[in-house]
Every structure is written in structure tokens, then in C-alpha cells.
Length: 201
Image 1 (cartoon, rainbow, N blue to C red):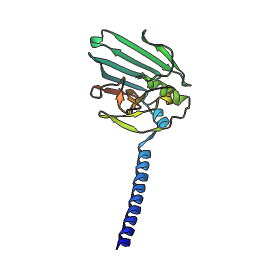
Image 2 (image 1 turned 30 degrees about the vertical axis):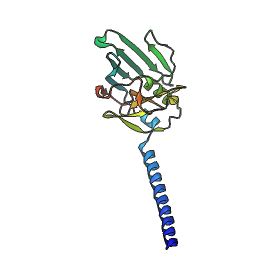
Image 3 (image 1 turned 90 degrees about the vertical axis):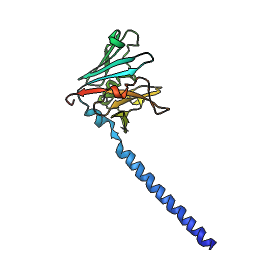
Image 4 (image 1 turned 180 degrees about the vertical axis):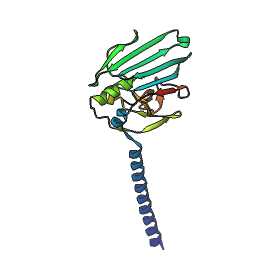
């Protein structure tokens, strides 16, 4: 009787191991299927988009506008009633080179990759330079989905935050902390986001 029980237990363990392996294989396949080819996705971004939203600050809600007009990307931040406005604009050349057109006086105005609401420009630039952009899986952000890309893929080094791009337009809506996995830093409040977009590039 003990031998029968021992055999049954052993077979049960084998069955569980087989089931676990099958589940892991299925989960792995699902995770792969859920991801997208980043380069193919960037290729199909709309050539025009307009994002309006708010970013919570300790004492007020900062109004944020993000716009794309072809190769020109602009982010505008403002205090309540637009008492103070900070405008930053970058342009992307056909080869992928990003140049600054306008920038706030209180930031480093060198055209180097950055994790910000304008990270779309550097991701599009990386695509045009034919960098390997890999795959990434869309994740929910409020009622929308975003694709969070490791900052190294747009040329940022020693980053703590990764930019998260709207699945439909490529606009940066949030940043995600790579250690905690939480949305953090310069991120639009999900309920405040309003987006319109135009023709494909």
C-alpha cells in the first residue's frame, strides 16, 4: 500500500510539473503575442497630434500641451491662468537628427536625448537612424494604453524613468519608474487627457 501511495504521489508530482511547464509555455507565448514591434509601430504614427492634459503639482495643476506637426514636436507647460509658459520645440531631420528650435531659459538647451514629454521626437529619430528598437507590450494608463520604452533605446543613459507613449499616436503621456514599475515623474493625470490626431506619416 505504501508503495502504491508513493508511486501515486510521484506521478502526481510529475503531472503537476508537466502542467506547470505547459502553463509557463502558454504564458510566455501570450506575453510575446501581446508585445508589438516598436519600429513597425513608430512607422505608422500619425503625422499630427494634439494632446491636452494636466500634471499635478503640490500647489496647483500644471496645464500641458503636446503637439506634433510633421517633424516638429512642441511641449508647452503653464501655471494656472497661463501666468507663466515654458515652450520647448524640437525638429527631426530625415536622417533622424534632432535639433532644438526653442527651449525654456531655465533648462539645458543642448539637443541631447531626454526622458520628457518630447521623447517621441527621439524615438522617431532612432527609428529613422535604423536603430534596433525591439519589442514592447502596451499597458493600461487610465482609459488608454501606453507603450513604455527603455530610455536607452532613445539614447538616454543612466535613466531612472522610462518614457511611455500613447499607443494610438506616439505622444508621451507618462513616465514609468524602472525600479518600482509605477508611473512617476512628469506624467499627465489620466482623467485629464484629451487627444486629437491626423493623417499618418
